[in-house]
Amino acid sequence: MQEAADRLLAHAHGDGGVLRQTRAQRADAPVKLLRLHDLAEKAGRQRSWIGTWIEISAEKTMRLTARFVQHAPIGWHCDGRGLYLQCAAGADGSICKSWAYRYVMNGRQRYMGLGSIADISLAEAREKAAGARKLRLEGIDPLEARKAQQTAARLEAAKAMTFGQCVEAFLQTHEIAWKNEKHRKQWHMTLTEYCRSISELPVQVIDTDLVLKTLTPLWKTRTETAKRLRGRIERVLSWAKGRGLRAGENPARWSGHLKEMLADPIKIAPVQHHAALPYAQIPDFMSELRNRDSLPAKALEFLILTAARSGEVIGAQWDEINFDAKCWTVPASRMKSGKEHRVPLCARALEILQSLDQHSERVFPLSDWTMRELLHKLCPNITVHGFRSSFMDWAHETTHFPKTVVDMALAHKLDNKVEAAYRRGDLFVKRVKLMSSWGEYCAKTFSTISTPISFQRSA
Image (tube, rainbow, N blue to C red; front, side):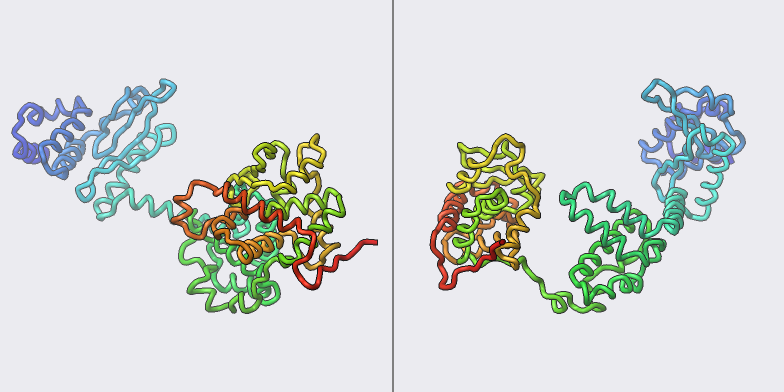
């Protein structure tokens, strides 16, 4: 058989020098087998003949010994029949040694790692290589077979990972990107409080029926909460699938699935926007705030004049204020959009800032609920966030400022993704004029409506 292999190789290659070595010469230099393999490839010879020759030549001899393995130098050392000891230089000057099985499958040369010599002995490496050869005889790629086994093992291990554990892992991964503490608490509460019935179940057994049993009790009575919960369950299950912990379609998906099994949430509970004060009543309201002359009143007035969010105002610091440029720069960390936002300051906004004590770090050292409490006393049905809507209605209905400028003033993301991708400026100069006009409107001393607003007075 050996001689037949030699004849086949000699027929394919006329370079007598290398191929006509004796078997003893080839056995004395395992590395030459690799060189021969490379030379054969360069000559255009089919790899299958070379692989056959290497395996046939090693049938009678296992070249490596346990002693050699311990003292082997850097390089590739053949044991025979595709098994190699790979010795590579480590970063610390040591020699890293591991086993590899080299084979050809479907005309493609492949290397299959078998483990480090610290974990796998020479005898065990030979057993692993023998197992790989048996798979090849059955037409199975050993590498692909191992990947399939690993995938099956992960899915099997997932039976021990519950939905609740996936929730905790998901939150640990994503909550670092959620700046709003309230937002983080809502995610944690909804996925733990409302998902108790499925929390201890293996994540891979969560199906449509279990998701529906979780959502149905809330769908009619707490529709908005249930709608958000569905989306959060969907994301957790998508995370689990991405980690190889479950397979198949997501049972919490909406389009083409739960949408057909649950009533339209918009028809059950129409979207309720933040209650806002009509812009025509803003001058009277601002006059009332100026008469109060308290820190919460000044903070609320400043919020209205800048069309800012409550968190942006409460967290404002003096080093963000530039009196010379008449500008307040809100850092990206406090913006909903995650981008720095410059706010033009009108004359009254600057006047409010100059009247405050500038020795503290924060401009308005008070809590968010202080403004809400004041507003509740004056207008019980109005929300602080609603003043942004009042500003938008005023700008769109009574001015000629473009919608893009108004959206920039409110730090809204542009609807047009193409425009958003190309726009680099923030239209600050145009927004200076817009906010100045808004400040002048807010400073009016007369009401623009026939029935002035009625404020509640505290005793």
